[in-house]
Every structure is written in structure tokens, then in C-alpha cells.
Image (cartoon, rainbow, N blue to C red):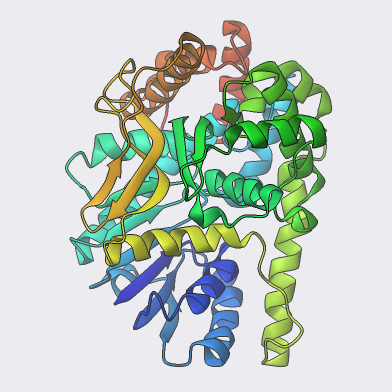
Length: 437
């Protein structure tokens, strides 16, 4: 079996490489290759990988490249995690809206819109490259903003059944619930509905069929909420998880995805964000320096001894476990992004929803959700309209539809504000976006 990782220079890649080594008995592969269009950034990770596998997985044939033919020819799985524009553009995605008194966030609101406009063409190009050399490879995609990317890829590749868009945030939440309850989250049977970064857990069953949601809500409202790996997280992530308590108190039906805080409390979140030092700066000064610094230490010492390059192992474990479930037809539970087609009965069939599914060799088999209550239906319909209009604006090069999309977003709402931020983002992204007319 051959696996490729697109976005080999990502700060998440060392943790993913470590997950591959840790799962070698359950998910053995013959060849692993990293692919990136930034050779210098990837070299650091690639050289680290050579030492990692020499010590932990010596039978693995490992390499890294900027040549798509070498990376994707006869590949079985491609794990995608690309970031068009890098952290330089992420910083603009966050700081430009903040300069206009709007929330600046990587995947939500105007920042997510800008990022989506950059991600769509690069993901389409990447998939065309993969399909040129491997017609049947499974493409497991982490690339953000996953909601917008999923809508665009379904439009571009409507008949390709081996593209699966995923997100590790539901797994991070399940892992955190497991820590609270002192249980292995792999034993949970989760029930979830929504859009990416915009969903809710309705039930979490243990192996005996008992719903753990009431107990979790009780604990969270009494003691607050922290991520399972709190000691590795920046302060902004601790604050993000802390907002779950407020969301559960205000809307106690379900357990929310953490990203909903930006849509439910935009004024509060805006008041807490620093216009001069955003999440992008935290990552650049935090995870970026730590991960690449540890990689360099390993390379200099020619040994893993004393190094710690793994941050958020759920990211790596999730994608490997998904591939494993597909490859060996395990039909394990995962929360994935699929076309609705009646899963949520009172939503549009073409919506790309995030729901629980079993995964096997024929892909996802999603659980039916049925009808959802009016509040959640209204929230999702508005957000999906934004995502769909964003994709249409990209394909049609339409300024008008881009303006409509941003006006619908709950983090903006006002048309004049939407126009102001759209014009500012358009200027900042002139080297990436096609011209809007």
C-alpha cells in the first residue's frame, strides 16, 4: 500500500507521521511520501520523518517530493492538509475583518470566506493531479475551510465517490468528553448533525447503549470545559472550550461544536479578540516554532531522543483510523461531511452536512437524522446559503453573489459592512483570487 500526504510541510505533519508509525501493526503500509509545493518548508519535516521511521518503522519506504507524479502515481490514499497563502494570508484573514470591527477567524465569517476563495482552486488542481496518476485513490481531505471546500468539490467532481471531507474537531470534542468521564472515546457511539464547524451532538451512547449526554451537560455546566490536551493548547483554545459552558446553559438541547461561539456571540467574541495579535500570531509564535524547532533538534542530533514534536495527536490518529476503517471494511463510527440527500429530512438535499456515519470499503454510510427543530434548521439554512453562495461567487466570478454570501453570514449581517470587508479582502487577495465582476 502507498500513502501520500499533500501538505508535507504542515506543522501537523510530524504528528501525522508519528500516528502512522504508532498504527503500523493495524495499518501497515509499504510506501509513504510527502508532497508540498514549498520545498524548503517540507525539507525540515521530511528529514525529521526519515529519522522517525528509521527508529520506529524501518521497513517503511519513506521520501518527500515536489513532483506530483512521484507522489501520486499508484497511490492508495492521499491525506490532504494544504494551506493556500500560508500563515501570511491567514494573518490577513483575521486582521482585516478586525480592523473593520468584525470578527477575524480562520474558517468562520469573512476570514473563512477569503480562505475558501483561495482553497477552492488549489484543491481542484490538487485533485486533478491525483486523478491523473491514480484514478481510484481515496482522497481524505482536512483542508479548510472544509465546509466551503466540500461544496466546491462536490460541484467540481460530482461523480467521484472517493473524496471524503473530514474535520478533527468533533473527535477533539469526543476525546475531551472521554477525559471528563474517564472513558475511551473510541467506545462512544456519537450522534451528530450540522455543517462543518457548525454542528451539535444529540446523543453519545456508551457500549451498553446508555446516553452520556445528560451527564456531560451536568458536568460542563458545573465545572466548565477544557480540551483533553489542555496543557498543549494556546490560551485562545482554552477560552474557546470554555465557551461551551455558556452555550450549554443558553441552549441546553445538545452539546455544541466550539466554533458556534462565533455565530452565537459575535459581539462578545469581538470584544475579546486582539486586533494586533490574532490566533495566526499565536500559531506562528507557538506551534510553528515548537514543531519546527523540535524537528531541527531531531535532525541535528540524528535521533528522536529528548524530542517532542507531536501536538494534538487526534489530528493524525483520526485520518489514519478513517483510512484503516475503509481499507479493512471495519465500519467504525466517524463524523464526516456528506451530501444530505434526506439525511436531515427538513434541509435541502444538496447541502453538504456533517453527520455520523460508518466507514467501510464502499465509503460512508450516514445515519439518518430526521427532522431537526426550527432553531437549528434556521441556523443551518442560513449558514449553508452562505456556503453555497460563496461557491457560486467563485465559479461565476460574481461580486454580487460574494456580497450576498457575506451579508447572510451571522458574523456580519449588515450589507455595508459586508461590502467594506469584501473590498478589503479582495485587494489583499489579488494574487490569489480571480477577478470578481
